[in-house]
Length: 220
Image 1 (tube, rainbow, N blue to C red):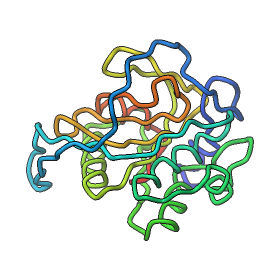
Image 2 (cartoon, rainbow, N blue to C red; image 1 turned 135 degrees about the vertical axis):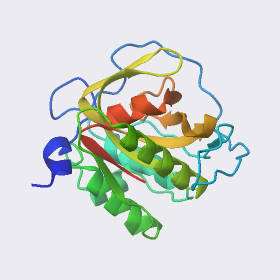
Image 3 (tube, rainbow, N blue to C red; image 1 turned 90 degrees about the horizontal axis):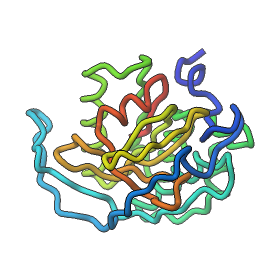
Image 4 (tube, one colour; image 1 turned 90 degrees about the vertical axis):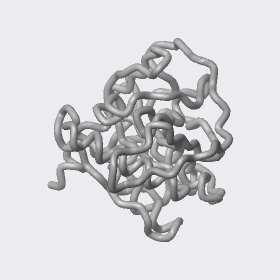
């Protein structure tokens, strides 16, 4: 069985059970949202060290998931909105094959994103339980490349971590969310979280995002 399906299959978003997707983080400690309008971006030379001043945030249409199992459709829809694609979550869920058990894996988000945007997306797995340094750097490169090209990244995550304001986000049953920007040359990643409408978006350090994805995968 493909490891990305075996380890992250039928990902669900939250703390309920293996078939449920919570509509918010475990602890309701929120920071004020930051505007999502695009910012100027310094060009990063991919053949050298990233420009630590480089920053960019995509203009997206954020929409919270309406139920416990729609994190995959909601996160994918947010990513599609960055490219001007206006689909409903129900339409995306139908394409993903989402059921009350969740959305199978990042392979499905990649498939649907490619069907609707022209085939630029690919799936990357982080098979280890903790992301290795080279996997962290691969995620940085993938996020910078995708965002600079106007594509948001859909990540399949699991576990609990904290954002740059110290607020915890806990999805022990698994979750999908969207990476929509970066700052500090990719040291910090902008997360659009469809299960957290009180905040919507927050910043998180690159290693924490990579470890959140560990044993799962992402579409970039």
